[in-house]
Length: 99
Image (cartoon, rainbow, N blue to C red):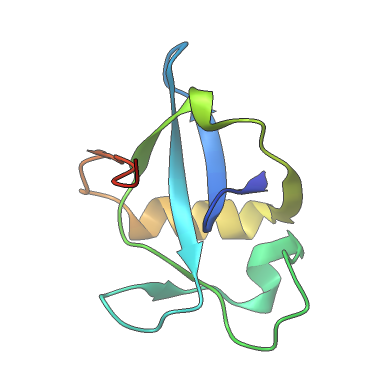
């Protein structure tokens, strides 16, 4: 499931009552981000013609930032691709630096 926060987030699973494991999406080509292809989506998140990328790391995000709205869905191939790309990465706790 893809949800919207500041950036779209691929929601993977609940980590515990306070946190969930996800992956951030962006349109930025830089920073080692990984490009997603059309076949990686069952439902694309927007009609933006720019390609979508994932940040190359799992993120641990707070459940309290909800409510989240589902805006898209990865295909089974997209989920497999994402997991393959993130092998060997360590989940990072995402902190909101804005007060």
